[in-house]
Image 1 (cartoon, rainbow, N blue to C red):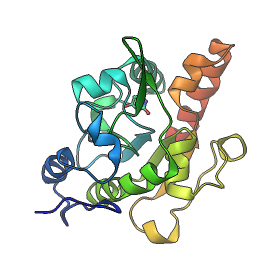
Image 2 (image 1 turned 45 degrees about the vertical axis):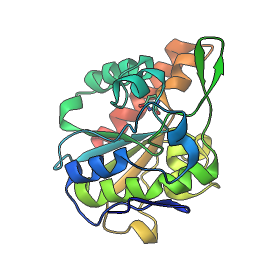
Image 3 (image 1 turned 90 degrees about the vertical axis):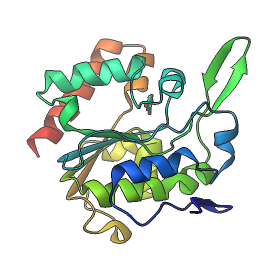
Length: 208
Ligand code: URA
């Protein structure tokens, strides 16, 4: 079964998350699979009411093969718990499913995925949305938000706003809300304030 083409990912036509995840493991739809350890597919229940999408796996996620298990994931888990979300009840994924990095000595430094890589990977996100059909899509950071709403989307202007699905994703989720990425909170000069605002965004999203 071909899972990729030169122009991006080509997921099988199924709503079975296990089959999708297996197919994604062999994805060569863009060049990122060459340096990454493995595909990091989403995880969580098929009936999750909330789907959270981040940018791409980081160093720890690439090694462990699971999304949001490194420092950003710990911050996300704490913030989710603080507003009363249980991570196990949510479907958690990334819009790009391979780690992109540059090597500096022994360290692997995160590199932002290009628009071409985001677009190449988008069919996997669409397949996950088609399988889960969440009521709320929570987009963490500009790359995730722009994967769904296009490059004109600005987190600074539109964070926290309820967003209807774009026409091509109509029916695949109820409403989306975008906020900052937890890594941005970790990097913020005033981390406590950034964290408070992030938690407030999650709380507002929960109330929706
Ligand atoms: N950052 C992300 O966007 N996703 C992860 O899984 C980890 C860090």
